[in-house]
Length: 133
View 1 (cartoon, one colour):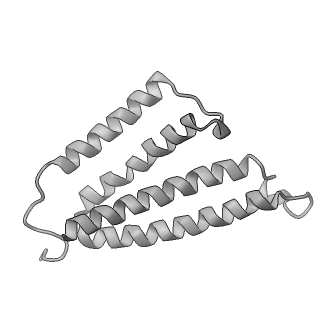
View 2 (cartoon, one colour):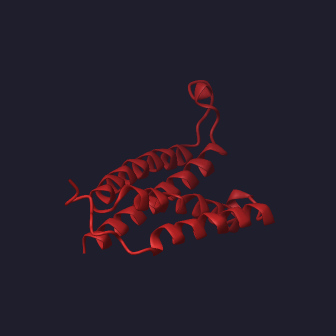
View 3 (tube, helix red, strand yellow):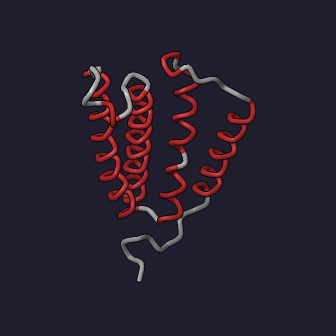
């Protein structure tokens, strides 16, 4: 049960950090550079998305800390790689980001996912973070 909770928290962290990355990308294409914020008009909607993205990062960190309590570091850390794949797939799929699929990027993402599956497919050892010496 502890591993299920750890996996759930790790995937929550992945989802939140991916949403934060996409939110930051969307916002920063609509906002001036931060050093210009005092001298030009700012899109308040885009600024709101930046603030929400920062909040999502904070929640992601809380999920990550919970995941570390229940999963071995090697397994938990490999799960974070899923966010790279998720951000790429969403950015290339959603027209608002104006990103494109490419064979090399898609192959790279497939290798990352394959690596995560290999690392996490073996049976967990009897030693967990809770009962480690």
